[in-house]
Image 1 (tube, rainbow, N blue to C red):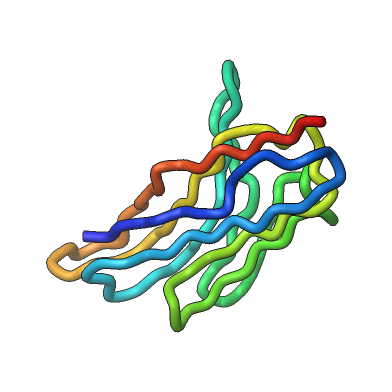
Image 2 (cartoon, rainbow, N blue to C red):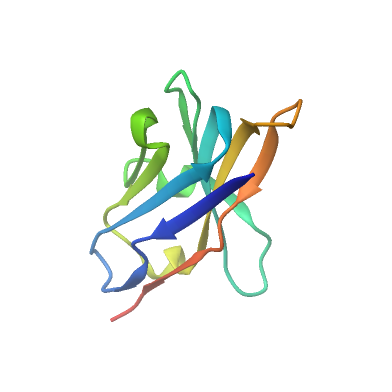
Length: 121
């Protein structure tokens, strides 16, 4: 089993910064891709940023140049540094990990519980 624990959300003024963290734990054999998604009321969940185990990254257009995703493989942790935050970045942010765990033959997608990010003056 894989558990994901997120932290770092909160309230910030427009133009401010936040750093989200997501630590994976459990009987993990391998972690492949790690990423962040977000969902705001009335909208579908969307990909924000993903990073592969080869450190390739991909961002949704609206956050390019403002957000940076990174990972610490030794800690099984993925980060999202969010700068120049805008009100439209307000959402619940979810961590997601593609991992293979003990007793499971194929990689599976795992989700965190979500952390609220609110950008408002």
